[in-house]
Length: 173
Ligand SMILES: [Zn+2]
Image 1: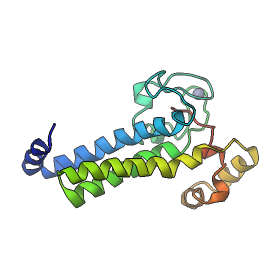
Image 2 (image 1 turned 180 degrees about the vertical axis):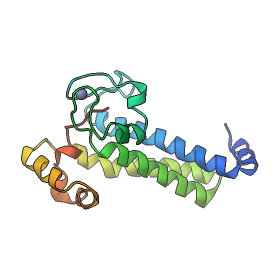
Image 3 (image 1 turned 90 degrees about the vertical axis):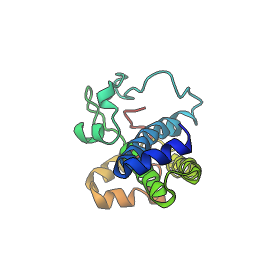
């Protein structure tokens, strides 16, 4: 699909194009989650399918829908109940919001494509430090006490960089 096609679609149905950009952003965010976890480990981006680190169950498609699956499952693996990192829905939502903002700024242009690629790289760069830490039981207890928006905000502080929620207690990919 070239830029001319995108411009024709945008003129015909502006809201539909913005919705398409958001859905595309969620899908890209989901892929970036795989990149963030697997590239540092030297694993393939394509095989195997995403699985729970707790019980090794492969995720069904309906357990892998960006943001929504996390909310449906209340942040836990369907089979073993292991906590899923909040980093996944956050990366997906931030990527979708960033691409939507870029689309609103540039419209269906080549500049939007360039901005989308740069923003995706920025999301990977910002999220990656949070996956390098090791699990720590003491930090896990601290996290349960700070669930909600305060916990979400403080999760970006350096002292939380080794937090298991941003570390290895993850159910996917
Ligand atoms: Zn599991």
